[in-house]
Length: 107
Image 1 (cartoon, rainbow, N blue to C red):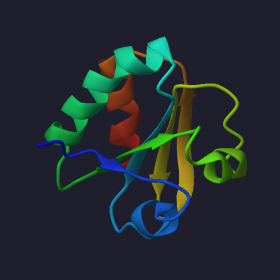
Image 2: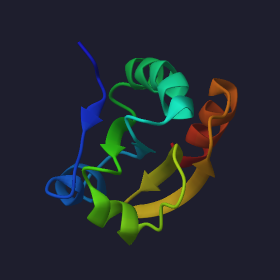
Image 3: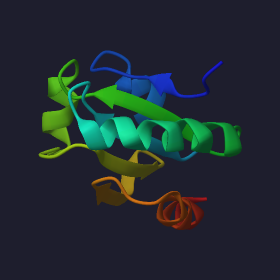
């Protein structure tokens, strides 16, 4: 069972902004090749960091309001959220090691 939660415009506030632990938010789209390549890494990170970091996936096509709110212009985009604020941001498919280095900064 996946530890990644799926968020949208309706539950973003509660699941991400109101989280008491840091959140890695993966903005992606079904048609995006690099997003599909990054998906297994995001799934693995959700498992590895369970209890310490919440991992959320949001489809920009289904949650256009949230994508606009955060100025998401390209996918994949990863936001590293802490206490409802953006602590870091990465655009593109980057290696797992780089994601983990950024996660370490928000823990």
